[in-house]
Image 1 (cartoon, rainbow, N blue to C red):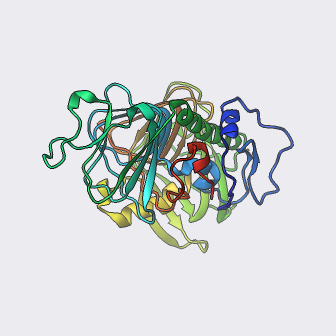
Image 2 (spheres, one colour):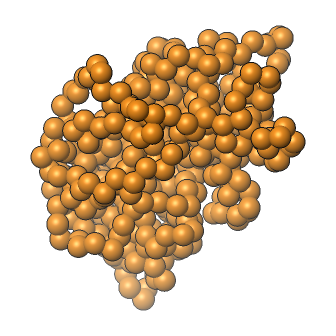
Length: 382
């Protein structure tokens, strides 16, 4: 359900959100909408959950993390307490919106935030007020940017779209990031507590298909998968989910430690009458070169597939997989191929030499509001 909540987040609420909030007993949904306490979810609606239902305002950011460490080009925005990058471009390719937000508590290790030349929308960058130095990429003599030794700073190549920089107190930005993390953490806990409605079994170690269209499965709603037998399946390239279009699938992974690899997946989507609709693989096209493919990943995977790892404190590895990766206690690392969707962790999201893709089309982010007010009042849930 796409709920509509217009409450403005107050600074005081943001402070409260930084505290450990225990989910209260008895605060349950009537099934029609989410239930909130101190602006955080304590129960989720029934039906097929959407990314907005699960992430709230965090749906606007491809990465929400304590730290995001990127080596090489990337194609996502983010809300993080620390950002580290090796002087490569950030380029965003989004439709149906004019601008995209970034929230950065601090650029670390001489990081340069570079809005690359192929970006197709405005950047709204909310950053530590001591790191707002901005200039055109210095190898262009028309408008030399800051000296390379002046890092950290913000540079841009794109002249057709704005690179807007708004300085804020570091603590204020971190409070907002903490709120987004707390929101996702609560949702992860709620999902983790749901009883399994599917416990897949497999013929042998090479079997890599989970069928949610078999008799007994509803054609719509949220399916909660017991992942006891899924670890060997998810690490196989091309593992497959057979599902109806209107099913949301939550993989509740109960592992607590070690390494957990999720590789490229495929969804075979059926219509409610059981006829075949489409087959989509999770690999996405760089720089949105194949728009139709990326739209299909967005619609049939990003909108519908959730990897929930509320209890996991090891290392989640993503290899060309796509979906919502809820891993609040884990370290997250990309390996081999670019992932897509959302990554949420209180620890570090490490992306060495591999970009992360965020091609979400529709956002509740509102760039057309007063820029001078507190960032914690600037976002509204829609």
